[in-house]
Image (cartoon, rainbow, N blue to C red; front, side, top):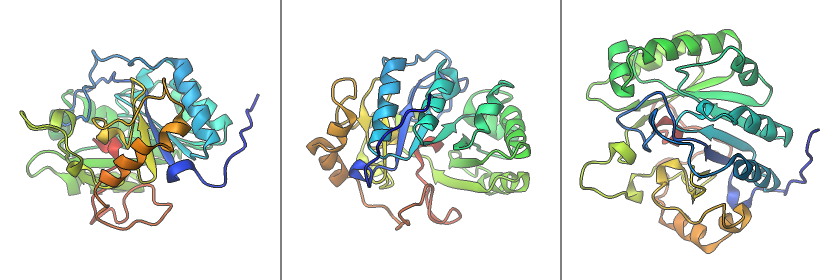
Length: 287
């Protein structure tokens, strides 16, 4: 049965996209990862019931896009259920996957109306790509599954993070474009998570300015942040306080005031970066 949610005229706090970091598990161990994602990580303390409540609350608040992210979101046993719930509530869903492993039956989910795929890609050189991901063979498997998504007509976008000196970023972009990927953005590596220099502390100066401005994130422990990159600056926890109260609260407003202004002005409905060739994307999913 399709659930019906009466939506407000505009989303609370202007949030159009909610990132749900449903797991820390990942087959890869990228040196620049924004969290401690790895094969040994856990799904966190949020239960499937908790995540279902957040998705329902987000729909009731008029938030139009639910992004499932990790870690590797498909490592969570309930990711398809979460996708179907969000779709039933009239939401758009993006599954941000490393595309290292895709089961045959998952393609049908990715092809559903209202679902898009996002992925990260680092180089056209397999050795360079694998050095960044920390997993031999990851380039071949991700590239193959990107090609399969394009072949199936599935909407897919890719983000390239500039991690290494003289990394083949432009060559990676050209390769993706030649494969038929239309949405391609690049970003510099940001000093968050594993990319943070030893002895330093997290700072909001590393943010691009889009955290809290159109997006928010719920982390595996239930913390609400401006985006997954600003995870060290939570404003409360959805397990203790309703999402609406957190987004409408003083702590959220104070955080938004502390986030640096975006470097470039984007149109209201922009979902990536404004000028992919010339501006920093700072899409949290890319890191």
